[in-house]
Structures are given as C-alpha cells and as structure tokens.
Length: 157
Image (tube, rainbow, N blue to C red):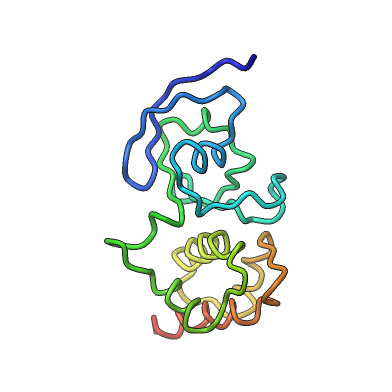
C-alpha cells in the first residue's frame, strides 16, 4: 500500500490542503482531487504536452511531476490564466482563428504559447513553431495555431 502525504498546494492563486499517495502525479491531483480537468492525460509520458501547466510560471509536464514535490510552489492551470473569468488574448485568438478542432491539446498549447509569448513578446512565425516542438496535435496541422499566436504578436505591436 502506498503511503499518503499531506501538504498544502497553491493552484491558481488558491491554497488547498491535500492528502495524496506519495506516488501521485500533479496531473492526478489536479484532475481527480481538485477537479481541474483542463490539463489532459495524453501520452502520460511527457511527450505530447497535453498536461502542460505552469510551476512558478514555467511550463511543466504535470504527468511527470510528483505532486508531493510541488509543495510550496505556485501551480497555474489553464483554468487560472484569464483575469476574472475572461479569456486571454491568445485564447480569444484561438477561437477567432479556428485554432482548435477536437480541443484535446488546446490547453497545453495555450499554456506553452502564453509562457513563450510572455518571455518573447515579438517572435517570428518560425520561433513560435519551434516553441511548440513539445506539443502534439493530431487535428490542426498547427497552421491555425500559429496564425492565432501571430495575431497576438501583431496586436501587441
């Protein structure tokens, strides 16, 4: 039997007291205990990027991160990136440019791109494409995703 670990975790600006098995991943904690289902369980091996969240502002694979190792750090999920329940400019651009089809990869794509655009405010299309190298989408072919991100870059200028 796996031992349980009790700790407090900060997610999307709120603190939660949790008790999880010592081998529980952050993805499991988010989806099953906190009912934040935006991060998806895709490959469960850190390859597809569907589970991307931010830990202290940096993109991380929730399926590879042990929940107990997050402890006092700040976790942000797709549910926590908009202000007062509003979509971010990138999320709006995804909608306006048809950048999602099935939507499964969309939260991970948005989390990765939001972090990249925060750190690189005026990238070109090839830099955006390179930033998505760890994000897999089987539906869109990435063109509309890149169009959406470029629209955000253009609007910022």
